[in-house]
Length: 240
Ligand code: F6R
Image (cartoon, rainbow, N blue to C red):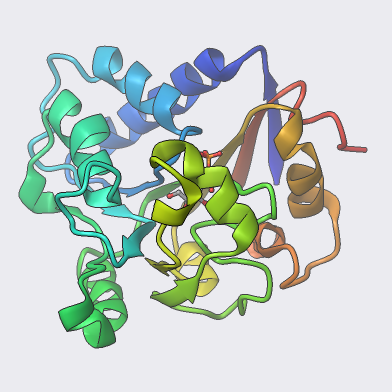
């Protein structure tokens, strides 16, 4: 993978946003792979300026994951987050932006349905990724198969603690999620993994330089022919 060390998260956001704008210039109906959490926010922020005045009506997108067991209208559902941080500020067509369906009633088919939708769109052109402190990408927690497809997973205690900041208390953080699998993520044509801060340094080193292991799901990116890692100095600090 190509590692790009940048000054700060804002610079990373501008860099990745430029890449996305160029993609959309080449292909008006580009398919973006959208991450949630804090890490991609500078990208979405930079896109507000960089995409202003451009035609984004054909742009398509697939979110990485969604919580299971909270209503889509909950402000911290990833459906809500993607609407608030991406669809509305960038003026994307909500019909073209997909988030896995975490509703219990349809959960048995939701993973397969999502895979079919991604394939029908011709696959993801550029997948934005963050990484968990435990090395997860998407919500593929340690132990996830490299061949996995979109499915329900149990969140680790670590991830629930990490994400408690978005909820009133850790007890409100869902136990389960539906996430693109590592095999799903690896099908995207270009992976762009971002990470900022000392807390991500170990996960980044493991993903980029460590052994290929299901214990550090981010190491799956080493199997991808076109992966770009954009990090600040702190997140790069454990790289050889
Ligand atoms: C989010 C996702 C997760 C996050 C990771 C890091 O859609 O799939 O893998 O990217 O948990 O979260 P932040 O960016 O909040 O540190």
